[in-house]
Each structure stands twice: as structure tokens, then as C-alpha cells.
Length: 319
Image (cartoon, rainbow, N blue to C red; front, side, top):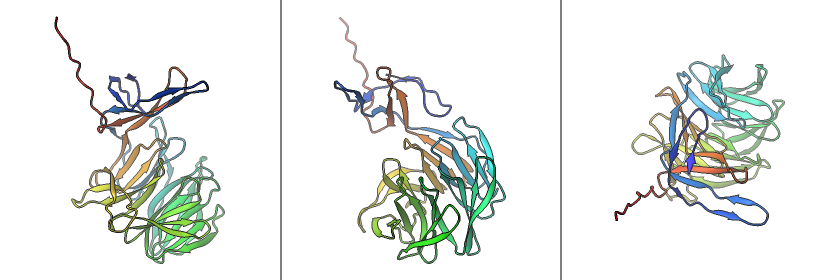
């Protein structure tokens, strides 16, 4: 099979062996299962000069938002690779999220309090809410424009309405480090200081759903609907882990990352973007892309994996 492109500006032309390929046809439609190619992921450093990239996220439109704490600025890199400055003078910048309803939001935290600032498509920057506590984590409901954060010291999970009003949903049992919002917007997963992960419903319900090491600092959802935590491994390198379902069980390793990685984000396909202040770099790891089927016109998923069978060398016979 001829693989002609990857997302962004990458271009790959290669003949590779396929594994795990299944094509099924019936009288009604032409179906595809994901195609796996034996290959390493494609790693590229995004062409953006940053000093202290503290957070990164991706929008539904394929844009990358990068928060630089030292520069006190927020960058947008569009799908074509063009960078622009959309936020400035953001003292205490710690998190960035994108709300499909309301645009990009930055969380600022310092001296026991915080603020949330909104950046609109028209370039307007204004304060959404003042937080009378030291916040940890920021997430956006994709449907109603509301935001979520936590009081890092008391464990309160706080909802921020689009108009800036605050309400406490529930208090968890420990201090907090981070949170992430489920794609449906109905639950918030909260990372506690001990490494416990608690699922909080917007109705105030709560349930312990997993455990990661206490070195974990970030938490996010993979588009395949599982959680991933960024932790410091035994060797000091950063590692991405899937939470264990019970205490004492070892979390499953999802991926290793370079030493100094401080934030991560997934696009809608599951490709990974990393922010690393030590390297002063934003790095994208592409292991999944889509290509249109020549027969039915539908998009089919193609995955790059070293775990798939390697191409077999052809054997020639002489006569």
C-alpha cells in the first residue's frame, strides 16, 4: 500500500507491510477497520520559540495553543503551522484550555489566588472570573461554555459559569493537582496529591476510579476514552501512565517522554503533543492519521506501530 501523507507538513512515501487489516462488505456499506503499519511514530519539533512552555492543548479545529509562563503569553499554531500571539501580559500563567463555545481560556495563579482570562477569535482579551483561592487545573465543558477548576488546598471542585459566577460542586478528600473534563461534559476527573483519581459528576456525585504515583502532575483524556497521567518515573524521566483500577496495582505505561516534559495533549485522532521547558520545545508525535479510501470515499484510520509484524523479505527462487 502507498502511504502518501501525514498531518501537518510531513510527507511520507513508503511501501510498508500491513497487519491487522480487515475489509468487510455487505449489501449496504463498505467498512474499514484500522490499518496498522510497522513503523516508528513520526516526531517533529514545532517551529515556535518558547522559553517556559507550561501547558499545551489542541482545539477541535486542529489549532495548538501553547502557554509560555516566562513570556506571559499565549500562542496559537494553526493547522498550516502558522503561529500567532493571542494573549499577552498573563502573569502567573499555568493552564490553557479551549472552549468550543467561548474560545481559549488561560488560568493564572499566584499568591494564594487566581484568575481566568478569555481570548476571543477577534483578539479581545478580558477577565472571566476572579478566584479567591489558589487554583489547580482547568477544564472546559464542550457544550455550555462553563469551566471547571479546583481549590488546590481545600479540594473543592468549582464550576465557573460563562458569566463568571462560581459554585462549588463537591469537596474531595485531599489537596488537588489537576483535573480534566470528559468529552461529554458530564463528569470531571480530578488528580489528588496522593495520586488518587476521583470522578466527580456535575450533580455532585463522586467516585474513586484509579491510582497513579504521587509524582503525577497532569491528567487528561485520550480520545479513545481512557485517562492518561503525566508522572516522573523511577529514573527521573517523564512517563505517561494509565491509572490502575485498584490501590497497589501497577499503572500501565502508555508512553515514555523526554526528561523535563511538563504538559501533554492529544488531538482527536490520539496523536500526542508535548511541552518541555527544559528543551524549550513543543514536540508532536504522530502515530495515527487518516486517508481517504479510493473505493468508497470514506476516511480510514492508519496507525504506525513497532508492535505490528515487520515486513517480510521476499524470497526469490532461481531455476
